[in-house]
Image (cartoon, rainbow, N blue to C red; front, top):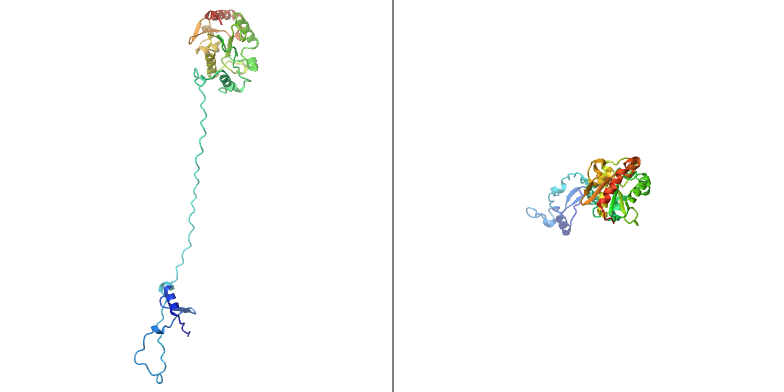
Length: 305
């Protein structure tokens, strides 16, 4: 039997403070009570003398079991599951909206408010960069106008031809030479040093491929440029040369045979309609009618410049 282990009062108090109840110790895997003579109960009856009775042994208190909670097997705890990882998709802030492109001006209107405030340099730059119709892909250059911009007469042609597309000037080549001769017959010229200068512009600013007739869409897209040119020149008289020029200036859809020979009005400005010089080169017999138209125009502006 193992010898009991005596604990000092300080050790006993320490064990009690640790929640182990009665002071105890563990020896070789089993609980062994500690002896506390001061706390042992007194023996019953008179104490035998030392000579007649064997020395009495101190009563051994019953073994004190450790608290139940210290002997119960611990329930194995399930391993902690890692916290579920929630995939949170990053919320991207919407990309700032690109500034809205400026709305293309409605060039089919008449007059176009988008062009009404442009001066000569701005208008010419707008024409040079125009891509409103497919003619911009086949042209060599735009044909803006020629002559004196403050002239009292304004001549309006139809569309540039091959020579006009090469040089960027309206009415050049044989048709231009015929027009110059017609103007000279009534004392007019496109030259700036002339006594009675004119300004010349075309209904279309780009040459149609193969000198074909312009389409209604092409005429509608280009007409506001002509309208603004007329506003800037502010002529006293307009001479429209050819069917498409007459229709663009007057806003009508009638053949040239019904339009020529009389005075029309664009606002307060008189408009005279005549044949295009290219047509007169193909039909020289019609030159007499063209001469009549020139005389009618001159009669509308007797004071000249």
